[in-house]
Length: 317
Ligand code: SN0
Image 1 (tube, rainbow, N blue to C red):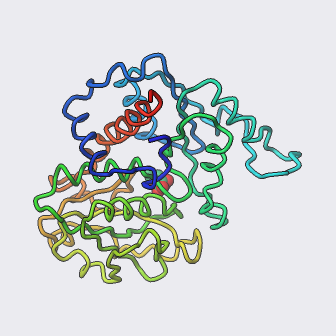
Image 2: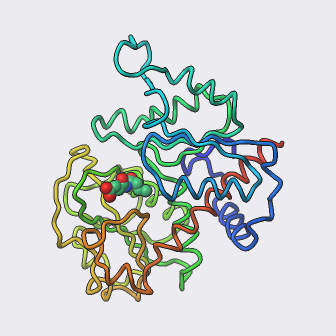
Image 3: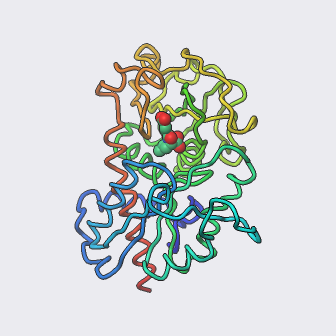
């Protein structure tokens, strides 16, 4: 693996999953792989799990890390081509990416969708600019359209908890007070289908995801029907893709409740965190044995460590 921007950078998903489960059993197996190498973590948005799990994963591989919080510590970056830079943005990505790439061996970036201009977010301007101007491998820590490290951790979690070879996985939209990106939902759909699981997506009308993410999944507008017989229930809010970045509904009837979980096949509850308690999902579900949110977060170390292991191995070739 040269870089990790999306599932398209994964040439062999079963092999990557096998790697992940091996690393989970023995986290220090590759403790020397990253020695004398370093990684820069660049954040344009907040993070708890992503930042700490990336640092822990790097630590397990002997790789040093530095963190740049662009919001509070760095110059505001300009990404446009041919722009007259007379506004608040002091540094162009051309220089910034080249400089960072001259200091580090791997660069990981978080840059959420701004939810203003769909073409801008879906063109992946930030990741693509880093890829173009930064001479070292790039890792996506949530971009305009995807969060592949989260989806990989989710897949590992399902693999560890599934009772049948092809579980029924339901992605349900849930209400939220703010407009959120589609990134987590998009990547979840792609990875679950790449793993050949049975995926049903449920959401109110107007919340259809981009076609490439939906793929061959079943879309059901009635949440209760969708949940029937589910082995895994993945809740997530996202803002509208069609009416881009808009909150079309805050309907509390879409919250995941214990009563709804009773419709499932003793289904497990999943969410990427951070989660708004009693808005997305009620306490009773989150605090029950059915909840996998902590194992999912734990597996964020494993997904990052597996990706880093593959990138570092590629660099040694
Ligand atoms: C982000 C998102 O893409 O939905 C990151 C998830 C890993 N979530 C949020 O920004 C939640 C913020 C909030 O106010 O609840």
